[in-house]
Image 1 (cartoon, helix red, strand yellow):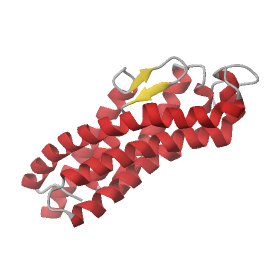
Image 2 (image 1 turned 180 degrees about the vertical axis):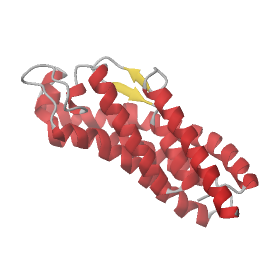
Image 3 (image 1 turned 120 degrees about the vertical axis):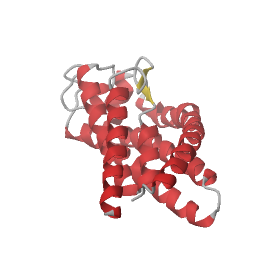
Image 4 (image 1 turned 60 degrees about the horizontal axis):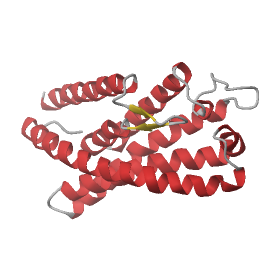
Length: 212
């Protein structure tokens, strides 16, 4: 009976996180327009889910993040949205393909896997779980940035550089700059938010005996 009740609570909490992500995905809360691309906060619920319910649940939420990014890139495209969706072409030169699905989905699944594994490893080593939440937030977030930008470079490098009005020879340096100027601040913010929200939710769930 206890396991059945716990499973119901788990499904309910996953449903809440899924609903939150769906709301965020189609409002400015989830994607912040930067002209040629979007910054995102969609990774925050993914990391929280991975910390609280394990890397498997995190991977599921990450997959949902990836799917919503494909939908958003298709419906409200920017100059470089073709790297995230096979259903949008800026021009015959700049067009998406099946590789767009890899860029959009694979790194987002890895957010949940990495964050969940980091949290599990550190939570066994330290008594206070604040450090585990901080580390999971940072590494989960930076996994997203490095994974997406790295795959863009590998799979769409020349098209992406041309669409952004940059030389392909300079693209690697630009990507490193994006990781440093956007990815690292995003990871720091994720660390703070995941720690604050995660500690509060963790305390509530422990009292309710809600864990995978």
